[in-house]
Length: 354
Ligand code: SF4
Ligand code: SF4
Image (cartoon, rainbow, N blue to C red; front, side, top):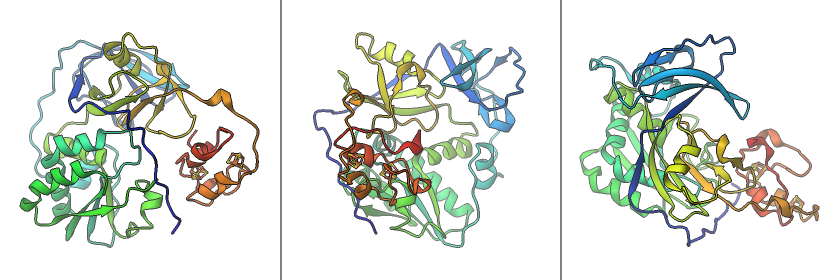
């Protein structure tokens, strides 16, 4: 097993303990792939299915007004009417986890093993989102995991948590007494252990099930509330006055969030979910999707790029034995950006993540 990395954290960046809310964006942007889509301007209610084949649901009520392109991706635009009118749904207790998961495009394939692992690990030391979910949705997460365990006829659920994430460990331990089939496995705080490709060196993922936090939150919504996920928590942090966790609508633009919470700050470039490397995006390019967990505002060092000094550090540090400078074995790259982070010449490596 490759020796993994201890990441030093900038302790000057502290996220506020309060969750802010930004649930009324003016516009929502929903990504779609269908090139033949004929836009029909229409009124939608929160939770309405808009494009069935792409599992596209409306996170707010309002009017579909147009189609736009951001960063080469097509988006449907919904103008929020701020009425949040929700379609009434009947409770559907007959549906299994597999049926529910299909509705939100999560595929559950049969495994031989008897364990359901919950990936509560997170590699980005600036991202407080997972911990906030653990503290504020503790019983929802456990109820959902236990329901999946029963449905799939599994023996146990194991929560994987980092030894450094004491808040999550305490929050789960407080209520685990009422979930006899769920236990905690403490994992080392090394990078990038949260990545499935690395995690499989520690646990048997071939034969057992693994779900991450946002999958469980999404499954909880569809199984227990019969509705798709329309909101999520994100951490906005880094080089800004007040780093915080904010509850936002899926599909809202980062630009609108920034103008609401940081109107006086000059924020241009951010890293979305990553915290290493120089693969930045402009604020205007970021639309919050269900996998957006952390927005890190950075000072970009890209201009300082110098010639390669052949030190070999990028090869030495790679957990997947790639050679990013010679572009060898890059099909195994997991876009962890350790090579970017370690490079003394600030060369933009680890290109697979784009
Ligand atoms: S770490 Fe940077 S300077 Fe060193 S070999 Fe790799 S690319 Fe070249
Ligand atoms: S080549 Fe890919 S897997 Fe290897 S360190 Fe760079 S980003 Fe990570």
